[in-house]
Image (spheres, chains in turn cyan, orange):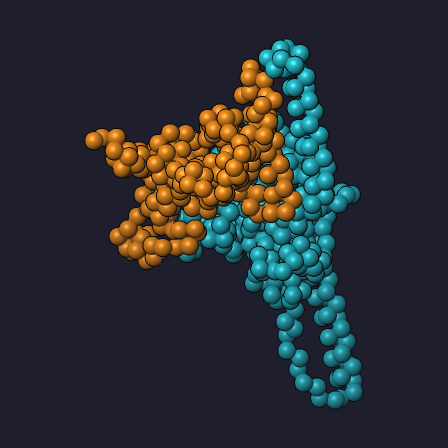
Length: 331
Length: 213
């Protein structure tokens, strides 16, 4: 057949396209389970890294197995909450933040992962997602049980400039966040700012920005502010619940101690004086969110603040919805 | 017909020529765009060089095998389809079995498809030669491209970030921020400086090739 005839060209291109399409779809179907497994392991590893676990994943013989085992061991719970802090049904691990970000703020399903550390303290891991310079950036922020102190963060990106914006994925940058606070001494939400020359000692709400990565740094700041803001009602409810439980426990202990003393006195048996129990309560007084301290000293102010924040949350909900939509449209 | 040995003088020349004398980047000035984009750090540059080498070599072989059947009028489209197929396959396989590498490579996949070296070699060599020489030519040109990438990224990472392959070379105590006297050169990180570095390399290359005598 003449190689330059139309018939030959049509037949040739049809055959070529069919063959190529078949090869590609077969490859995609066969490789999909492996790829999804990789993505799942990657996500679990990021969650673990934010609480400084699974550090040896790089050198582990079977990385997937190691990460799965660590994940089983440390991540003991997860939940999905709404912007108003209400618990929702569903699997937190299956929630795609990318899809949630496209919804109006009130409809969003916000995942929380709960880590029980070796010393049985709880850590709460919040997934975050935002926009860098060239594409999306995302990560996980792990908070201590006071919901203010950051335990650790992990960030990743799709296509930030290597050597500049992409530095956000380095441990050197992420380590700066450890021990920073997202609430100030007056329990006002401050998030963590990413500023030039920041991150010096005595600045609990700032980290040093990436030099040459200004837009990415701003993106990180915005991402943290936006995403953590959605969880404020959840934090407050958890904090109130924790305080209520602590108070209950304290009352019970006092009651039982008094009962024991009464019994001892009745029996006239000299007993060694019990040292104050180093319970969570005493520890909490020093490390807990400033909210707790402020609440103990100025209950009225706290009540006012809570009203104010719940108002603010609602306002945020109304104001932010169109903003987010704009952002997404821009993307 | 007499069988030609694998590394005959002619085949060896196919391999070594693109490394220096007719380097695809410095002598033919192909693939400059990606040479600017991926050379901020050494590691992505090496990953990119390996991927391009693989794609050029395999696509050269396929096109060379098909060369007598391809209708002349749609040959560029056929080349494009074959190259895209290979790049997508490479990407999919990496994603399944070498996930961490694929995360670095994913940004550059599009750059491989549009890399002029790939189509340039198919047009200039594979369509007129047998599969084996085409394969050797692809390897040679991929490596020639790689040498330039590594050279440029060596200087850019060293002067721009003070590191090589992610390891710190210039001690952090030298830096102004830590009380030293040294500061990284911000211009080196940006694409214009890559172009200037590439220009210098092309100048040296042309001088060695005797273009100015």
